[in-house]
Length: 163
Image (cartoon, rainbow, N blue to C red; front, side, top):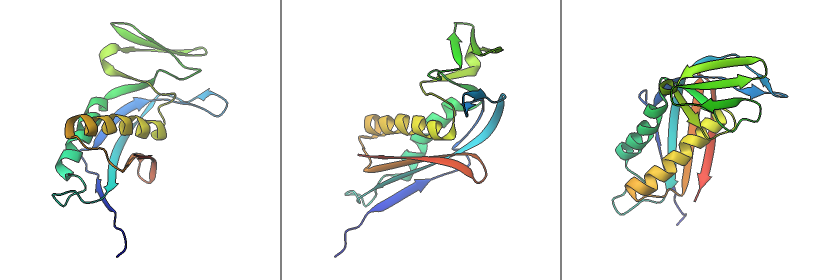
């Protein structure tokens, strides 16, 4: 008898987040401020549990939606970028790249502990948050977790974590 592995995947219209961002790229150039309507897809792999699930779809959607809802309708700012300085104050966030500066209301920003707000690193951020949420809230550690972040139709990045 061959071994079996199962995979469950969720991607729904409500697993989306609309955000502003900008990144540094190629020799540390900085792109213009812009936004995306991101869409998230999540997969977990493993063997069937006693209840004949790998993991419950409803719980997976709920935990993913909690994370995407936190990001939705915010300015995403990477705090570990080597060329973009982020100064967080109680009232506002000041951002500087060379001779360019932006100022955003504090409540409109999500400061992410990542190097750049690329689709790849957003996927990794969401995967880390989801991994911890599944372990803490659902007592579940997936054998494999994949998180895909699509920033435009046909343009996405995926990260895979293995236990």
